[in-house]
Image 1 (tube, rainbow, N blue to C red):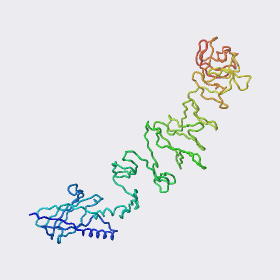
Image 2 (cartoon, rainbow, N blue to C red; image 1 turned 30 degrees about the horizontal axis):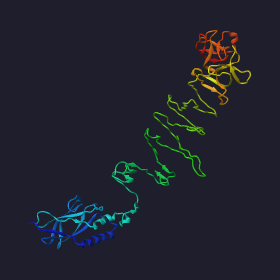
Image 3 (cartoon, rainbow, N blue to C red; image 1 turned 90 degrees about the horizontal axis):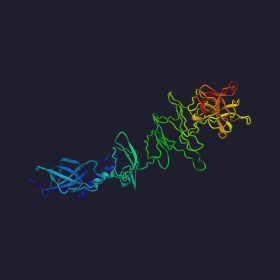
Image 4 (cartoon, rainbow, N blue to C red; image 1 turned 60 degrees about the vertical axis):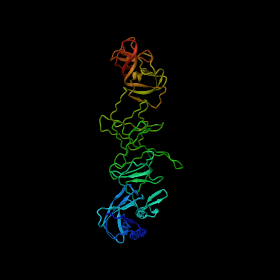
Length: 477
């Protein structure tokens, strides 16, 4: 037989709940936990029920349907006197400010099934004092979190964050995540799905990684291994692709001065080491006149070492044909000098007359130290040939100064192409050559007596007739 059972929640519950909170405040050193005291009055057959009853308590987020929040709390043998009972309920940390309703099922003596009491009871503010105890301090709670306007600060020390939860549905700002082998600190706008700049210690102060006393805007200190590693992937859509970009700007104000882009020192090893699998390990580019791609200072300004016999320790290239190495001051020392792309030793002289490559020159008796285009046969004043004909440039060019106008690089020894005249006698390889009456040309030295002291060199190619270019080993005699 079913008997009508009713549950009343008297106003005295507030008094009990307040008493509970007061007790918690007195013993605040002991954790309060998540349980709370609930008191009610049960009637059966229109009369207060006395005796024992089994009770099941459930939380819902709706007064009639909704979802159950937390687990069941089942209490057996609850004692009731004149209908009144008091129980301790603990649903865990479910009170976050959301409205919740309590449903009670009762099984009294003589009943075969539980009776669900209706309606569900709305939990008033008293249980939410559990949430208030952990609320920000400015809200009346005892938490170290302080809510001031739109700012939330924490005065209790460090913050630990577990389990990554991105991407977030919305919001923008700084996010801290963990949950794996790494931790993340980043700034992001989830409303528009764009990265935000993350400023460390802005607008001033130093940032230290591995040190508690940074002396620079960013100082990275490590006892071993790499101190700083950057990786950047190249993209055609970026104006600059680099792992690190450093710019030394000129200071402003009365004390402003120039600033070095990279300053590196080392106690026992290289200050800067560059390695590349397909390109240069270290490169220096000069983008303005009067500046230097790489500048070396005293001791060993620039030192190149290659353990591979097939690889150079240093390479200097000027694709425009300009100066690749300028050693305008000091001594250049080499153990072995190998010259590629040049075949003769030349010296730059002041020249009168035609000075195109391949032209035979003689000493100018009218101007000390100058040369002129040869114009007589078997001239004892023969001096050499203008270097550079047929794309065969000089290997070494000597010069007293850097002047080029009015001068010519004259081959004094080595291989050079020479303008020759074979009108009177054909030229074959091995013939001695001397000056010709044709201005600027050489010819075969047929008269050995006249040729003594007038020989330009020895032919390495042939010219059967007429005029043309002959490859000659210049060897004045």
